[in-house]
Amino acid sequence: MALVILGKTECKICGQPVNKGDFYGFPPFVGNTLDPLIIFNDSVFHKECAKNNQLAQNALKRYELIESLNTIPPRCSLTEELITNPDDYLNLGFFTEDESHALHPYNCMVFHRKNFKTWEKNRWIISEIEKLDQSGQWGGDGLKRLLRQLKNVVDS
Ligand SMILES: [Zn+2]
Image (cartoon, rainbow, N blue to C red):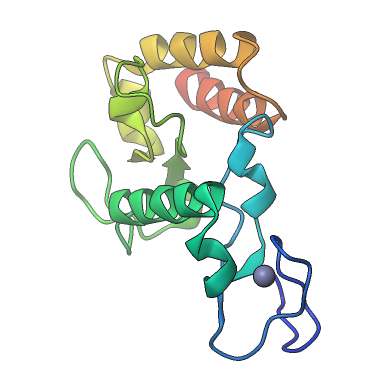
């Protein structure tokens, strides 16, 4: 979460400063810059303001979903083994809430690099991420960075 200065940092919804205990704070958790929830990335907002704001409610739901998918410490989605070395850690991140999307079951999957490299679905998933990146529904370079990382592992 962004550095919060009580009485100074402004609520993303009303623009008034937040005070102790009256706000929610989010880390950067939205990768797609075209997602309407992007305004809540790395932000704070009053609990009171969130009550009547549908977008804020959606952001809280999304954040809860991502939290529920992320295990701490991380375990490889293929082998369940703990990932202890940050250099050996691949994280797909969150793709979509759309349950009919091909990538939906792969939201927030994490891998040991060696396990991703030998996973039979690795090239398929790379091609699906490419499709999403080129669909016009995804903004920012997050998927491009992810694709570079995944291809490096597969080609290593
Ligand atoms: Zn507010």
